[in-house]
Image (cartoon, rainbow, N blue to C red):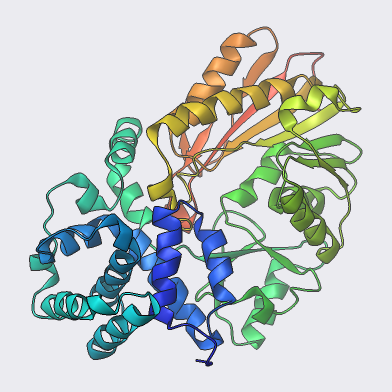
Length: 442
C-alpha cells in the first residue's frame, strides 16, 4: 500500500456506504474507489464489496444479534465497516486476526476512533461462535438474501424454479467472451488462450462464446486491443442470431449502448445498414470505442428511442432490436446492488417505459419486418405481460413468432432464460412480425 492510499477496509466501508445508503450504483462506486486503492488491494476491495452485497440481509441479522443497541444512522459508515468485517470472517479466507486488527485500525480513517472497542468486541465475539449460531433465519429475506417483495414476485412467476433463481443470484458470474467471427474462429482463440496459460471452455449454446475458468482483466487476454473478442454473457449472445439479419437490410438497435449486441449484429451480418441509437451520450462513446476496437462501423446516434418517430429514417427498418430498460433482475449475480436499489413500484414504471418504446419502434418497422424484444429481467410483468398488452393494442399488425430453440423456458410469447442455466444470465426474448405481404421462403 502506498502512503497516499487509504486503509483498504475503510475504503470498502466508504464504497458500501455510497451504494447502500447513498443509493449509487455498484459500478460507479467501485470505479471511483479503484483509483484510490493500491493495485494490490483492488481484488480485495471488489471481493469484499460484492460479498457484503450478496450476503447483506444475513449479515445485518448477525450484526443485530451481536449489538446491545442499534448503530445510529449518522454512524452508517461504521456499520458498513462492521458488516464488511463480518463478511470477511464468515465468507472470505483472510486470516481472522488480520481481519479483526485491520478493521479496528480502519476506525481512525473513518473518523470514529471511539468505536475501536465496539468493532473489536463484535468481531471477536463472531470468532467465538459458529456461523449457524450467529445468523438467525427469521425471515425469507435472511434465508435467501433478497428483499421480500422480490422473493414474492419470483415465487409467483416461477413457483418451481424460484429457489434456484435466488441461489444463482448470490453466486459469482463467469467471465464470458464472444469471439469476433470476422477476425478468427472460436477454436483458434481457445488455442491462443491455451498458449497464454488461461483455462477456458466453449459455451454450450452460443457458437462463438467462451467461458474463462478464472476471471482475468480483459487487458491480460490475447487480442483485446486487436478486436479479437468482446466480453458478453452467453444469454446476450443469443439476440443477434434470433433477429436473423440479411445483407442490405436496414436494422435499428434502439437501445444500443454500450454496444454488445450492436457489434454482434455486425459480426453476424457485416453488410447490414445498422443504426445504433441510445439516449445516453457517455454510453454511446463506449459503443463508438467498441466499434473502433472491433474494426466495425455503423451509424451511431444519440436520442430517445421513444421519440424515434421524429427520426429521418422513421418507417424504414426491416429489423429492430429493442433491448429495453428493465429491472435487471436477471443479472443480480453481476450487480448485487440491484437487491438494495429496486422497489416494487419500479416494475410498473419500467413497464410503462417498455410499452412506450415498443410502440415507437413498431412505427418504424416496415411490413413483414421483425422486432426482437429483449430484457435482462425474469419478471413476467416486464416480459410476457408487456408483449400481451402490446399485442392486444396492435392486434391488426402484430404477430408473435415462435422461437424454436431448446434453451430457456417457453412462455406464452417468448422464451425465458433463468439465471444459472448453463451458467447464463437471466434473459427474455420475444420475436414479433409486422403483418404485411408474405415473405418468400426462397
